[in-house]
Length: 32
Image (cartoon, rainbow, N blue to C red):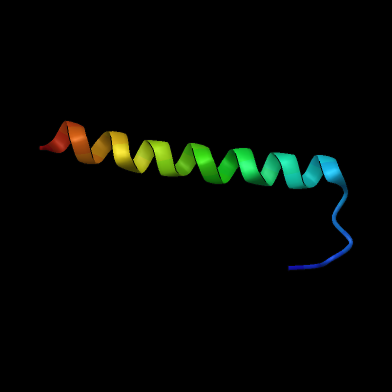
């Protein structure tokens, strides 16, 4: 990870991580 990320890039990266986590949890619940 480069430390010179812009705030916008950090926000986008954070949203992407949260989205992927929600998707994985959602599919886990659906498959059960």
